[in-house]
Picture 1 (tube, one colour):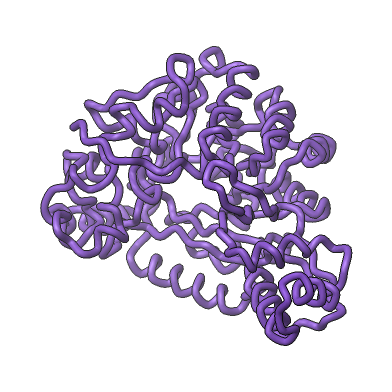
Picture 2 (cartoon, chains in turn blue, purple; picture 1 turned 90 degrees about the horizontal axis):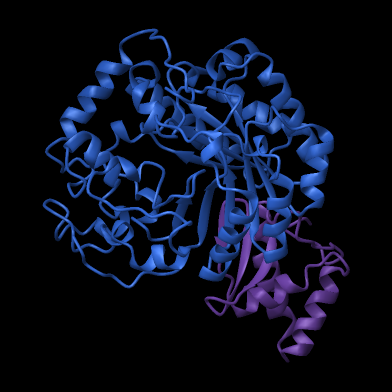
Length: 365
Length: 91
């Protein structure tokens, strides 16, 4: 496919600074094949990438991984982003950060911290993360962030093993002084897909979770913003994944590969380039992989002519690949997809398996 | 919500008004949000620097733009209420 659609400049960039992480969360959206430390971009290259991103029109950078603070040069990277005026968001597990290191990051110009929580119960939380003592460190870090006057988002990843504790998770975020909570139902790509049978909640659990969020939103209006990433296996309409393929954001992997999203490499036939070989601008505007699903010329039935396509953008290409076997198909989360019932059935079946052991995320599979 | 005129509005850490030179416009950057304020909102937000009360901001705007003070006050309070509900301004 080689249809060139005039693309707008990207607004956001997810910089996966490293795949290394002390946590082993089974819902991780990283790919099963993780980059090793020896393959990671060096400091100077990352700085060049941020400069190119700024010149391209990126306004916000999400420093992620893996655990971004596992890199020795995180301070230098944050300082560089601040010098460019880029809005920096640190997406962290929090377990490697001391008060001193956090202060240094804030002094370097860090704008926002997003902290993941696995559960409210320390034992369950540490079991999900595969890291003993992690939960208490997270709670301590969250309080330090708030005390320093920096906005804190608590990211609560929700799945079958913790969904019942959602009201307590929201209460914990409230107690910590978070300005924002992201109730992120696990999205089934990468490690989460490999663990789907252990993670998928039941339909009733999901319905209850949505209701809990709506009530909390009303109650905490003006105090805490609550965003919810809904679990689309039970949906009627697909999510407008990434706001459309290569429409608003890009993703750079630890080794420098530039992708339209985390999972894009799971689609065969697409060519993706490295920041080592091409400029970010050239990759964004001119590469085959980025142009493959821009606009709507690639769409097939039932998306063609559908009045909702402006909203959902056809859904998620990677999910279409995983579940329909064709990345140009409608996302099976859509009720009009011929694979929709099959997707729903998979979720129901997985959700009724009871307790299934996790396959923990680790480098080298 | 009612906002008193002696309130001193200030953008908190993590909320920044920035000139987006690539797109030739102003943007308000906040946690996981990029807002595109219109020209009036930009003038209001620029003045929310924690150095002056709301009354002074309204006076300044109505003088600078030769606009009716009561109308300006309504506009300003609406913008501040919008931002406050989203935790994007300290009042």
